[in-house]
Length: 160
View 1: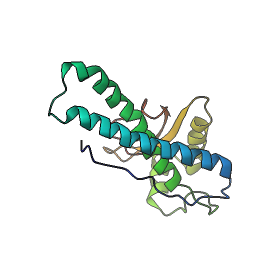
View 2: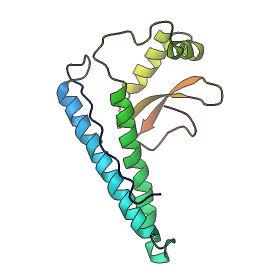
View 3: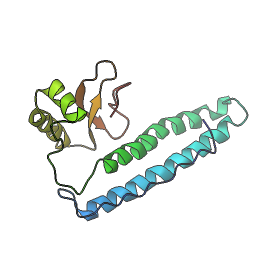
View 4: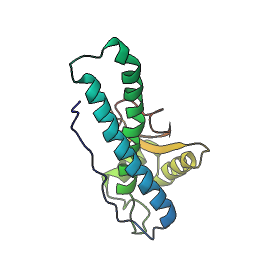
C-alpha cells in the first residue's frame, strides 16, 4: 500500500433525473465525498503503522481495525462512483437490443424484463445496502445480489 496514494472525489453533473430527486443526489454526493476523505485518511494511518516495515505487537489492534474499516470506506467510494457513472438524463429502456449488456442479460435471465424485475426487487428490499448486478468472470453470466453496507456480500472475483 502506498501511504501517499490520495484519491480525489470525482465531479458528477447530475440533476433533474427521473426517479431520484436532486436532494437525494446531493445527499449521495456528500456521502461519496466522505468515503473518499475517509479512504485517504485510513491509507495514511495504515502507512504510518507500516513505515518501519512491520506491524508491532502493540499496533495489531489498531492496524486490524483500520484495515477492516478500509473495506467499508473504499467500497463505499467505488460503489458510489459506479452508481453515479451509470446514471443518465436520457430516458431509455436501458438497452437497445444490440449491445453486449442486453445479450448477457438475456442469456442470464431469459429477458431484459426478467432481469429488471429481479434487480428492482432486490433494490426495494429493506435495509442499508446495494443492489448490484455482477458478471461472473469465469462464464460471463450475470447475477443480481444484495450487498449489505458496502463490504458484506460482495462476490469474490465478480465484476460489478
